[in-house]
Image 1 (tube, rainbow, N blue to C red):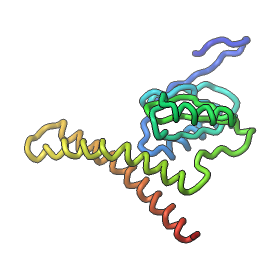
Image 2 (image 1 turned 90 degrees about the vertical axis):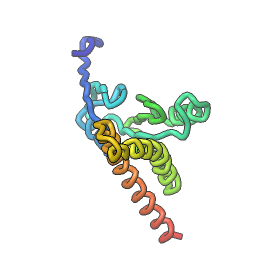
Image 3 (image 1 turned 180 degrees about the vertical axis):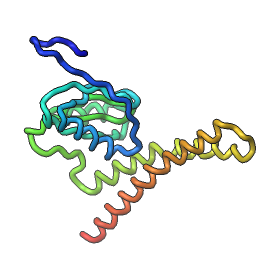
Length: 180
């Protein structure tokens, strides 16, 4: 398992796992890193890890405003790279980032407004998918299609993170009112 590099066998591990909450996914990646499993790649629920020094990296996940190949995204990722933040993987507009833990704390959202904007981007990405699945799922009342049941299940599954992120936004907005 793995390649030989300077006489040391590099151990790799593949994990299949799906998340509907990026905060929990990010927490899991950091738990894996604490055990010495460092993310090397991600594609549609398949994570590839390589064994390394426990706690070497801190991971963050972000939904970009634009696709990764957009000039604004490229400029932003270049800015992060100059700050010592490495892009490990990307999927659609999601990017998986890491920074050496020894370099200090690693936060992408330094203020309430940027955190709210990030949660809103996630909602705006999920909401159309949830609505389309709900509309197709409502056909269950006109025909007895198994696909309609799956569409309803998908809409319900997307409603959970949408609701969670809406609650987080509401909490941050209440905090803003208290502090102002």
